[in-house]
Image (spheres, rainbow, N blue to C red):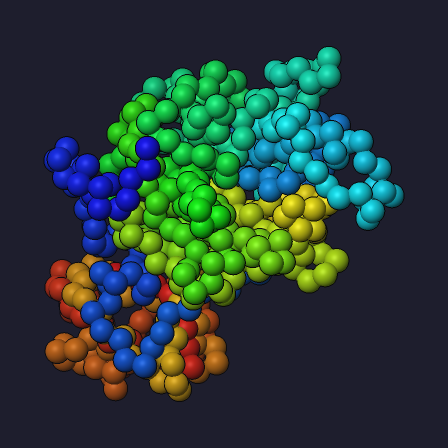
Length: 463
C-alpha cells in the first residue's frame, strides 16, 4: 500500500506520535541553511557547497571474478573508531551473463542487456586511511565452489548497511536494509556474519534502489529511504518509512519526485544522514535523455518535507569525458566527518546507466559543514540569526579570503558591526573578536547575531 503525505501524517496523529522539529542546542553546530537558525537575511542566498574529488580516484575497481559489474555499486561506509578502520560494504553483480559472455572487443556493437539470471551480492572492503583499500578473503560465502572471497551476502539488491550505535543488542549492531522478494532487513554482530533476511511487507515498496536507514536521535526512531514508482507517469519516486524497533515499519510514502517542469530529471536514490540538526539527502538524479546520473543536495527539518537546494546544480558532478565518473555518480551512505573535512564516498562509472560501463569506488571531499553556504546576492548582504545562548567563544565557519565578514551582536555595548574586527581569510573556526569587548561579558545570555558578508561565504557557527 502507498500512502500520500496527508494519509501518512494522519496515521501518526491517530497513533499519538509526534515528529518534532527540534531546534539547535548550545552544543550543536548551527548551519546557516537551517531556517530555525536564521530570522532574516537581506541580499543573501543559499548555494550548494563545493566538493573536491580526490586525485587518487578511483580508489578500487572491478578486479575479482565475482565482481563482474559494479553497476551502481551502492557503497556504505563506516569508520570504526574502536578499530581505527574504514569499512565498506558494496553491491556488485556477482552473476551477469551479459557482462561475462560479451567480450570487451564486441561491446561497441552488442548492447548491454540485463538478464533475469543476474544476481547481486554484498562485498566487504577495509582501509586504514580511507584511500588504500583491501578486499579480504573472509571464508564465509561460497562462490563457484570456493569461499576465498570477500562476499558477505548473496542475493540482496540495493543493500544499505548501517552501524547502529543506538542498538543495545550486540547481535543486531549492524543492520542491512535490502530488497529481496520484498523490502527486508538482516542483522549482524560484526558486519560480516548476517542473519537470513526478515521480510518487512508493510513497507510496500519496489525498493530497486539504494535502500538505506538511520536511527534519528531527533525523532527517536529509525528512518529509511527506498523507492516507489509512479508507473503511469514513468517516474521513480523517493519513498520514506519509519520504525521504532527496526521490525515493524510504516507503509512507505512518497517524499520526493522529479520537478514538474523537469520530468526528465528523475529522483533515483537518496542516502540520508543527520548533521547540524538537519537531515541531509544525497539525491541522485537520473537524467533520462543522456542516461547519466549525478548527485544533488536536499535537506529537511523532519525527514518528511524535503527541499532541494538549487535543483539542477550538482553537489557531486559527473567527471569529464574519459574520467572514471564521466557517466554516473552514486553517493554512498555514511559520510565520514573528520576534524578538518567531510569525506563522501561514491560509486562511479565511466558509461551510461543502462549501457556498458566500468565501475569504481571514488572519494569527494567537502570542507567542515560544507554542504551549503550563504553568500551575498550582490556585493554585500546580511544575516540576522534567531536568539542563541553564548557559552564560550563565538566560532564561525566563513570563507572571507576574497572579501570580508563582520559579526555584530545588536543591542550589546561594544559588539556592533563597527566594533567587530573584520574576518578576511578562510577558516572553518574563526574566533570572532571585537575591538574593546570580549564574549565573556555575554556568557549565559541569549543574543542575536548579525553577519555582514562582503564577497564571502558563511557556512555555520558555534556558540
